[in-house]
Length: 238
Image (cartoon, rainbow, N blue to C red; front, side, top):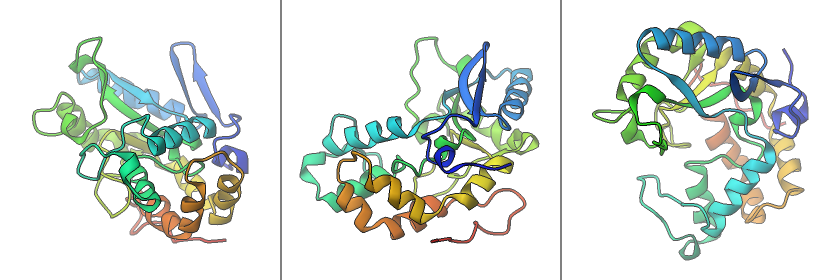
């Protein structure tokens, strides 16, 4: 299993596939395991379905730029709505990174990671907000959260943002196929990110590049260790 540079960055799509009955792009080695997880969930009365799966580099740039300019909601770590225009460039970078990856650094580029919800738990017109409150206590996807906690690793999935480790906020909806994502994580280097971000039309690019080594360590490398690992993968800056 290998990833090319462009596959790691979401520039290429040569590593992702879909099916006629499953219109989401997923890494070719993760699609079968996810469909198996979906079948297992169905036996428990859960209609496991992605909100998003593979996301390319240009889509991540759009998300970043819309949050930077305030055209898309910008949230504090506690979920409060922020006024982008009232923040310094450094504050905007931190606010975006708490919820969204920098372009090139998203695990969704790899096709190994999916954001999921339970279609059976809500009306057909319900739009998941991807908020922690939906997945805990009396939230509509609390049962899904409990089921995933008990069964997701049986099919090779885990939650890389299960806890607040000081980087990305907890995301109970975010699943990663760890046998495949582990390889991508090892191969994504700081120098690669610096090169692609430096050449892209990203709002606040100078502020992002200025702090990129720290951002790489805090928001890219600092994730929950995959099952079977004693700790997170070692930081690589080459």
